[in-house]
Image 1 (cartoon, rainbow, N blue to C red):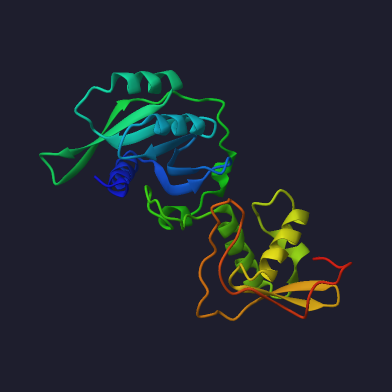
Image 2: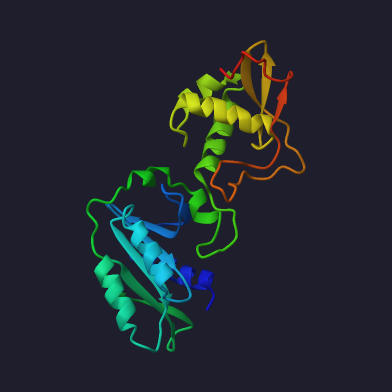
Length: 253
């Protein structure tokens, strides 16, 4: 059983019970949750793997800081898994087992152990969940391409500039939600990404020390922004800076 097939079965199970679901979501600590589900007010994180290992249990325990419920989902095993189940119980992590259904053409999910409720979990990060988290990358995928906070900032910036071409960086980041700690940090970091040609769909034009942001012409080689494995925000594609290099005493406005 492939991990993506297992995850797809779990997603179907959750949707059938009324949960909203998202896939491959970046968490505040930089980790990546295979599945995030929400049935207000509860947030449930599920890690899917093809085997129940100590590494998986440790990963799931780390998720208890960010979700009210945390479970692991694995293929059903023939052995009873007494030791693993005792660890899961000790850490308050649930267990979902996926098995082939002999009487139906497909697989079935059995909740072997219900997750403990983590009342003090921090779930403010879920406000950044969006439709792209549903489709950008299938849960259980090992490759990159997940929808990241930086990619969401790029999308919001492009949408704003499309309606307000020629806006300043200050106006841009005062007007949109973004993943940076402050608007001042955002202006400097985002301008640098543009100078490096790492954000598609926009370009910066210089008028003296004044920087304005404009939609750029699409490039044939442009692609969606992606994060580097280091966790630093980055993207591929078509942003360029017009009007020369920054002056030594100048900066983005």
